[in-house]
Image (cartoon, rainbow, N blue to C red; front, side, top):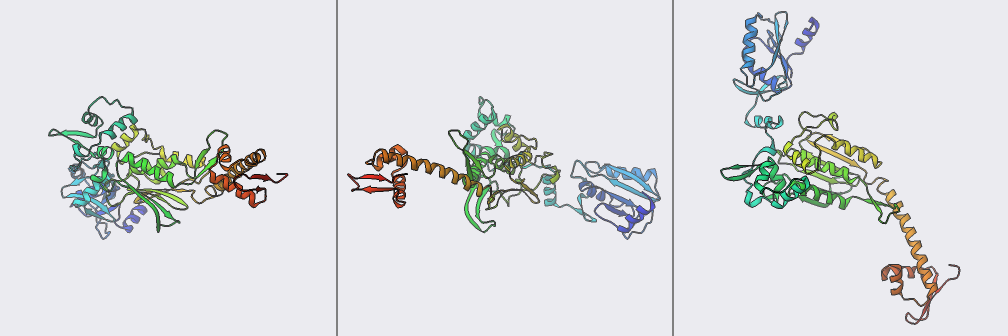
Length: 456
């Protein structure tokens, strides 16, 4: 640091990463605040009003400061730098937060070190991943009353795990249960997966699916709330999406036509699983949401990105907010735990000729799929359907007229049988022929016959 840089720092004053101290009083508080935040530097020998007073720098002084850092819990890492008679103490951001000094826990808020109170400390622990929702137990869950063995059996089959142990031993081996005073206690991972109905335990684990009219949240055409267990929630949500997503058909020459959804189902499935596996389950005021508009589908979950991730990391890094949940979904072949889901979604959208999804990362993590109401959904479907309908109608017309020429006295019932249409379908075609003067009925309905126009 040169004189110009030093003067500039002093002129700027205290800030989020800069603290001025005239002496050693409350030094541990400033150290803990920086270690619990993004790190910072303490300028020892500078008053709050930016007056550079200086301090006598000795090995003894440095030793006292190092002792202060070491007596924090856990010890805080510091580095000394000298600039004239100013001792600069650089405090690194801690990698084992939270840090506590002699007077409590502190965090840096702007230019101040603010003490953390009870709820602040709880939130801090959650944010830093020291407490994980999926590892906690819930006394409201009664193993005998709420546990569903059939769901465990289904999971074991999906995971390829032999079902030879009793359920309690299997749950303990999976790391989602333990015995306490002779009772089986499940943690939240086990509760989310194997409850008979999550409504009996939690309400915020609901997946809310909604279909709106238009492009705004005004008129709801259909809504479903799913809260049985997280695997059932995934499947129920996908069924809701399949029910409301436009599908076009491609004739491939095979016996069955190929269904092509407007947005790839596999891409939507990845997004749904991501919302369920990575949501912040400590947040009880919001649900994971699947919302269908005329022009888009939005899939969101509370909690934003896990700590340690930025939007630039999407598709490159994987940070698990709920590692136990992710582990079991991985064993059941729902996810890979490798951060590949985002890239899969992008690839599937590109393969379908659609725009890449949009990602919004704030308090909610939202994936927005565009495609609804686009030419892909409207013109392509209409064109394909129209061509298929025209070809089918022409063939049906030719068959009916050929049968009428061959047997003018043929009945509607017999026509329906040979053509493969309903009686109403035959009536529709005959009425159309009559209207266009292609055929004429000679005589009564019973005992008469059909006369086909020449040249048809």
